[in-house]
Length: 198
Image (cartoon, rainbow, N blue to C red):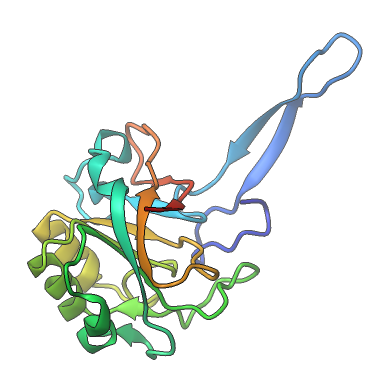
């Protein structure tokens, strides 16, 4: 993550300023950063889409940790629909990451991002999934004002992970480590998303 990282239009870009630099009389470098918690891979908190929702720092960590499945849904068009995932839904673990990008747009915001269809969120919830991840900036279309998938996630008590880079990740099962920071009043948290072979 740096100043070139794309952000949702109107959101806060990553900025870094040095408050101290190594030199005569100063033994350390120290910086201050300003950023939206939605830059890069991040976990949305319910507060993002529910005015009474919990903040990122209060989220249980279990949904962001342990067994997950990466499912490829490439070239689906605007929405990932249930038929795009059916090939990988048998014995589903409680965490699913959906790869939609052939190459993740690391240098610009993709206004045509691939989002999820609400029926896909409902299907995954019905199958016992607790966390849904998607390698785009939002699980809903960029121009959505009603955020139907976010609202389904709220209603079903799920968690969402957006923007993880999955370009080199084959389909299959992994251990996920993507813990949100303990930001006690934030509507989201950056995560360092890691997948390890089981």
